[in-house]
Image (cartoon, rainbow, N blue to C red):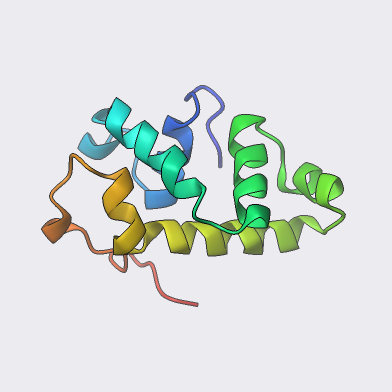
Length: 115
């Protein structure tokens, strides 16, 4: 569930990496991380970037994003999930989580599996 009380882009960084709101990582989001996120979002397909930005900047539901793009809400969820998987990949994640030791970063931990 998206927390509308957390401003963009912090809400998106927390969602991408699946951090708990009370975690040290979530509490230590920096301006460098925010800038890295914006740069890294631009490496996604235009469709993925657009849907992620609508979902997390405008706080639209999956159904609402789907209406804008003439897709079902479930398809939008699939596209956003694919974008998140790309953003969690170490080659992209290193530009977002710049203040965290990347040797400790494992995108497959915490029950995340490749689908």
